[in-house]
Length: 116
Length: 117
Image 1 (spheres, each protein chain N blue to C red):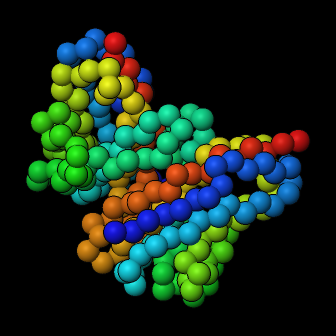
Image 2 (cartoon, rainbow over the protein chains, first blue to last red; image 1 turned 180 degrees about the vertical axis):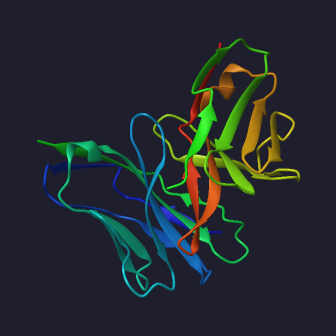
């Protein structure tokens, strides 16, 4: 079974600064995918970024980048130039790519608050 | 990205009644949809995997007779909470899996907040 750990229940960052949200994972499978989702107070889960276990380069999507360190089993999300609208809950998740049925295992989340 | 809708967004019902929640993929076909439950300030818990044209696969501990799932078409899955009780009050959120840039990504609906009185 796979496990996702997010050790930061809450984070604060000033507007326009960068912030890193931590995520570590545990799996014995070699082929897996890692996701980050944003959940604003409205409740909708918004897909942000994806990293495959065999991807050699770190994923980037606009202001979001994923710092993937396979040997350390970490997949931290970096948000650059934070905006007030980035205040939300952020979930790290993983799926097993072979025979996993596309199921997602979620971490407990990090509540990010962007301040002026 | 792909758009998933959910209806209703909020429902309040009396104990003992059944509630149906619809999940639709609006601009793509989804052979697989997922239903999650989320308690306040907690993570998402997968309840079941809904496959078009076949029976849903329930996670351990989820009562299939309590939470009926029907995936009648490639764009619609429904979750019916039967004989709802106050402990069923929760945020229910669905997702649909779509092949996007080489990987299967789950896109989520806006969720349904169920309150059972």
